[in-house]
Image 1: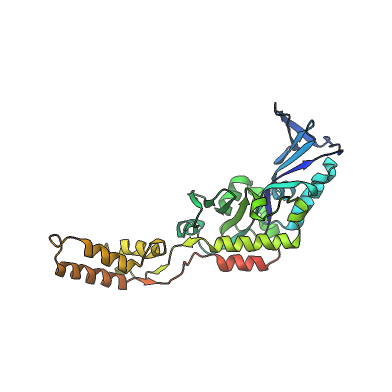
Image 2 (image 1 turned 90 degrees about the vertical axis):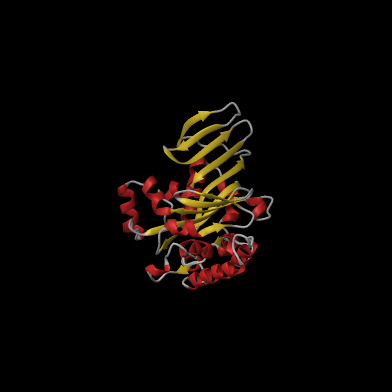
Length: 311
């Protein structure tokens, strides 16, 4: 587990920034100048000479390691220390405005199956994409996305082969990134001033890990239904299969919901005997579907195992 994207700001005071390793990209009327480090677009350095401020924005793992598939806190610290050295200012003292913390899991099923079964987090907006599913509110975005597709889009074949030799990356495997994107970390962690040095502390690392597992656990997931034969998937049972999978989103028990719906149909359309007959048919179809009770695409055990490992 490690940090990825970060946005941080520092008051420079008397520090004189070294520009020898920076390439100037643009100047803005707001007083800010945008730089990149030796053509590496993974991070941006913004300077406001008049206001004596510096901003760091970008992905430290991509900057220091060229990838975010397998990086560690040590890599993150190394990247910050290197930039501090070349810029001649201590970036560990920079105030964190935005950051991401997460991990990559190898999973035994497709990322698409995970996205389809992970439905919502109470109080957060759900956004679905071909490559992932995001849950938003005003202070954070909780992300699930296809890490393998992301790597294939961002890295060359040679770079992916290097991941294979160094970290046992398998392009045929399924990888999922689980990530907390903190838009307002001072609110999330109830801290008026959060600097990069504090991010690297053991206590803060533990807090980020706890938040990641708790937020993932809060996702409402579709129930899993065992289907053992073609006979179970009749025209009548397929709609019931979907309803049973998403039953945990309904305001009441599915059987009770169906019972009340049939009961509400006027007697001139369905007689009492007709209603009893329909209920018997539906119950017979329901018995064909065996509910496992949990989502078979739940990644909790994989995430917990990753938490216990050393990255």
